[in-house]
Image (tube, rainbow, N blue to C red; front, side):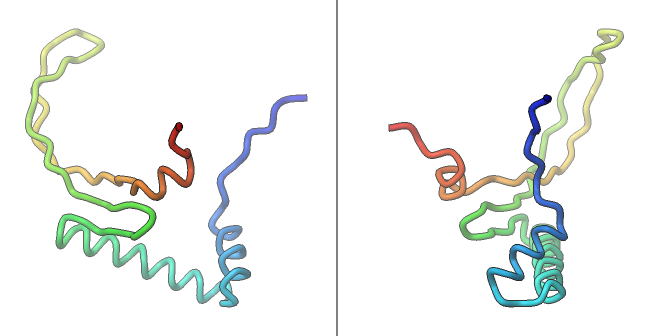
Amino acid sequence: MANATPTPLKKSEMLGVMAESTGLTKKQVAEFLDTLVDLSYKETKKNGAFILPGLGKLVLRKRPKRKGRNPATGESINIPAKTVVKFMLSKTCKDAIVPPKK
């Protein structure tokens, strides 16, 4: 028998768990999550960061142009500057998932 690896919650399963624990309907929870996601996108684009207390924050980072190497040919290439989105976990979240060693 093969080892069964745990799978992450699907959206419908997450909505069910959250609806049960909050007393809201699945539809209300779905609307809340959709609003939260839209707000996080807009605020990150507008202000460069969006903080979700207890979980982490989305931040925009600018990467400078740099030299790279084509792995197939070994040829040196220029990689242009770009802006990327990163998610940084809060310390509270990290400690809740993987407690620090004592």
